[in-house]
Length: 419
Ligand code: SAJ
Image (cartoon, rainbow, N blue to C red; front, side, top):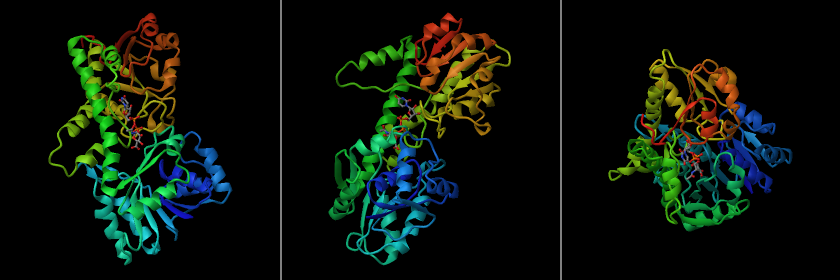
């Protein structure tokens, strides 16, 4: 089968690679020339465990080639970004539109088009179909169309793409059937066919469920601080109930997905209340963290604060919508001197420093990202380099006793200590 995949990002490239190593002839299309160059030479433009080896295999076998324009194929898969328009809090569909426009002249009778990009419910029928029908072919009768969202977790994408269950929504049953059969070439999880609008909705409610659960955990952390309760103990104990599973509080929610999908879900709704409140609760966490910093360094003149972690979550070097970015912006506006260390992110454009340079002369270390490497920090060495010894742990991941032994005053988000 010949497959043309538009968008070679975190979802499109692993998908293209998996189809190619499973015997399909894949052409990967992207508008970014440096991405095309890298992929064409078998190099991954971003870190993802397991992908480099698979990509080399796909390119060396000739099953994966790249191009800057769509080519004729049996199936087309769209995996381009759908950013959030921050002003209107609505999906910006310009990349989806231009990818579909690009497919239009190549579309032939009997082709299958699959949209993987996350979109507000109704987009496949309301936006994609009218553009494709400019080809004079008719959806359902001349060509087939489905929405097939991705569920993979960055950092474990390849494994999850193969083993997670998938939901596929077709505009008619034949579209769903063809898409199930296409994805069965590498998906080992169960594939659940449904209607297209339901599939669009399902993708959004998965990430919204997670965002709302984290917002609940964050609100519990704030309440616990007022009530002198340790929220981490409380959540751990509540989760011993067989039907309770509360996620972890933190400095806010980052990444491409949880920060926008709840807005896509509700953008045309007049009934929603909780979903946007959860978004706002999570977005306000960096402001709350700044309040904690303020109280910790209040007696220090010209305080210097060291931030540990700029990635949006542990083990990831991606700073998209990372709570650290917002925290740094707010703290600097207030006059704090900020130094950042992140073992996954290097380079002057990110302003990251080596650990020793970042803590030298600092008055407060604040852990923002739960990178596992932070557990191995040489606390004695850090203590020797600091001007004042304060630690704020927003993820409850460091060994409190170890830091206290080196004279650090330790505050953990939601630990019930008075501000
Ligand atoms: N976070 C917390 N507390 C938690 C868990 C996460 O504060 O208990 C924060 C993280 O630090 C991070 C943010 O939430 O800032 C998002 O991280 P994440 O691990 O929840 O999710 P993503 O964005 O890396 O991936 C999600 C996943 N969705 C779900 O688990 C429902 C993934 O399976 C999706 O494929 C992905 O979104 C996507 O592309 O939609």
